[in-house]
Length: 250
Image 1 (cartoon, rainbow, N blue to C red):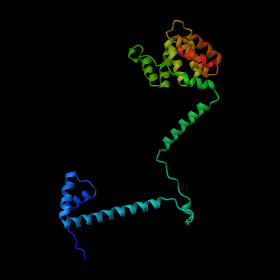
Image 2 (cartoon, helix red, strand yellow):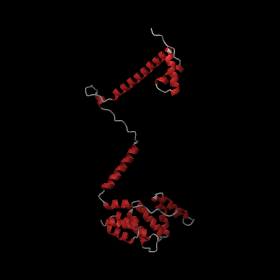
Image 3 (cartoon, rainbow, N blue to C red):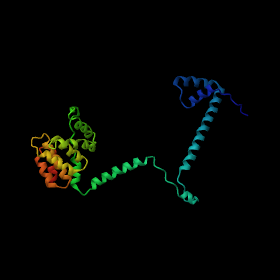
Image 4 (cartoon, helix red, strand yellow):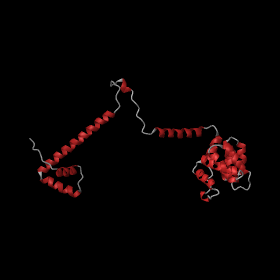
């Protein structure tokens, strides 16, 4: 009968480091020297090695069992009807995220499959005017620049609501007409945009004259009035207008 060895925790950890090659070179040399001169230590090493091998074999068996459980079932297995119909696993992606992705995908597909080339051309070239510096606000024009803050934050509807009452007091103000026109165009309301931008194009001294021709051309383009769009692009000296003219002449 084999005598049961008494292995302390410290000895076990030291032997384990030796077996798993986790000793430093110096510690390993000292341990090998002790091992060659101590039969009792040799037995302890063998016992710990057997124990570790057994643990590893058991772990491997568990892994193999799990692996076999995950394998697809063969057709020879008899199953109940209930087992044939399984509930699909729920996606980890929230439903609202899936919906948002689908909206973007359908939007892209619609854009590229749209039969209206003018709509595509408008979408490719339209960028709202960046707006005026809001640091210019004073007591007299606070409401206008307050609306400009909304405009620059792409809150175009709010900006329009703040600017329209001001226009009733100054209907010929080119700045108000210009930014109202661009805001309406950003809101995809080209018909309203045309009305305001036309007012600016009548004022030859306006600092927004060239840009008003450009945005007026875009509004007509979106509205399907190509000849009017070309006329306004031709009047504008902006680089974007010339680019669009070339596109329309293809």
